[in-house]
Length: 117
Image (cartoon, rainbow, N blue to C red; front, side, top):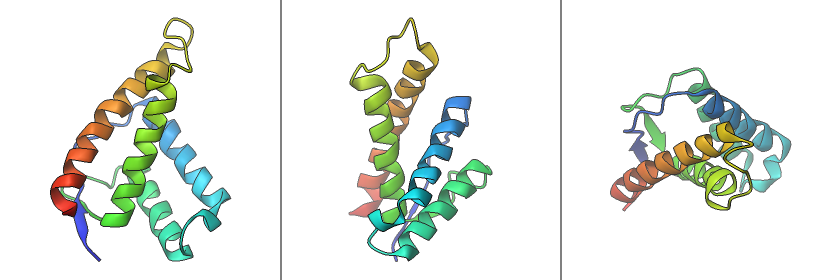
């Protein structure tokens, strides 16, 4: 399986910790949304490694797992920031977290496009 170096620094803010944990909960709650259990297990392992600060810029990630993470980060950025579901004055932590994920999703997208072709 092709691997992609994580490449970017992704400091764990409280928002990041919370959302990545939510990614894991969603995977564990609906493993049938994956083509096979192996992919779900590998994604859960990646998310756990990420939460335990084991994922560094030099860490090699399976191409499909990298893409799943990119898509989840992009989706969260869209919900919390781009689609204006939250008011910046009422929920600044959520909106700012969404902005942060938007920036990180762009970085991840560049890495994915560079190494997945």
